[in-house]
Length: 156
Image 1 (tube, rainbow, N blue to C red):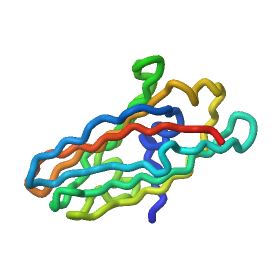
Image 2: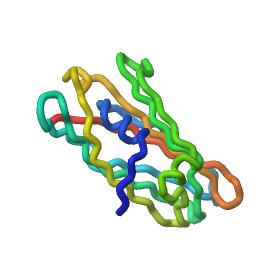
Image 3: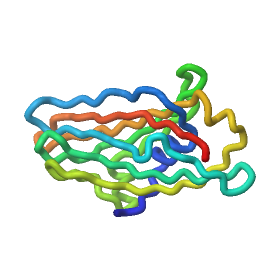
Image 4: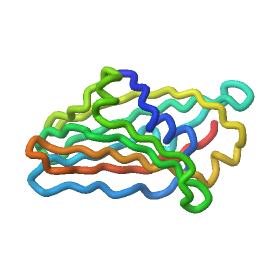
């Protein structure tokens, strides 16, 4: 397993709280992606004062039987009933520049392990905030596919 420092995931987990996630889209007979965050909810552990650790793993699976190249990973953090409070996006070139593969083999999966440390100055951020993560890619024929999910966070 590789340690990944993609800010969209860190941003996502650092400020999240529950809900249903966005849908995935694909075309039958082409590459398809699913995304899973484990654990969900992510368990935030207080280190000291307002500093918390947010350990989690991202699993990206190809389920359509065709390899997929990831074009973009993005995160949108929502609060107060859907107001976007933060957003970040990494394109394939930026991901590759960090030394990480953007290629998911046919019927394969990629694992990314995170252990982010964040300063959460207001415990209310653990309530009523959600974050959506989205992965956009395309299979070897150029057919687009999208996977999305929403992650929540609880405190230990």
